[in-house]
Length: 379
Image (cartoon, rainbow, N blue to C red):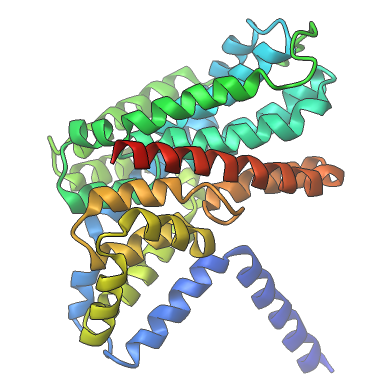
């Protein structure tokens, strides 16, 4: 019957949505369960960190706009014209992700430069470099982004919560970012046939200079907000007004699932914080073990939800910042940005995704072990 068919179609859509937005679904299931203990009220408004969400939304729109203008493709093209060997090409592709993620977030860096890497390596007949290059691009984006408050969503949230200055934040993470850069450089020397000459064939991309300048100005305003020099709502109003009149489709296309994931976890953790027995248990587990708690919890729920969940149960936010950034290494879901690389590779080269998963996991565990050892030396 039509009713059964409609029911099956609806069920398939629900299952597909859950599969695609698993973290969002979990966040809201937990939020709804917590509502049975504390019914929705005006208290919920206090749970929501509107400032963090406003800045995050603004940055997502700005980065989506810059990508649409062809700005990142233009940068990549200029850099790749200098590549003469497989090693040079790999270095450019990996460090594009490392440095750009500090300013455009790890997600945007991977969305932009992983498909670019697949295209470039194909064009140069170096498919053999796909697995290591994309693996190290992903590590580079996840760890390069840890240096700045705007590098990833968990940093933006914890930076705002901690009240740290931007100088203190960068100083906290700089030793680990510097070590990552050295590790990535060493890793690039392990690539096979790295000295083999190659011919880079580039197809020019369209580039809208005027819109790039406008988005660049909006990004500078965002930096002023992050440095706490102007109120965040000035940024939100400016982005909304400018982008609405310049390229309104960008406002629709950004990843609102991430923002609603934040809201779900804000409600869940807010209600959880009103249960004295739960607070006592979680505080005892997290306090004094912030780095380890951040790393371990990230392996199962990814580092953004881990930051939101654990931040309510410790005052040592510096330790938690280190923990959830390290926590982006490890499993494929430890950082949701890692799934971007995996999906891009699987879409373009499905036959090697199994080998990629194994290589990715081993490389991530090695990097995590080295960074953890370095943290123990410094602490």
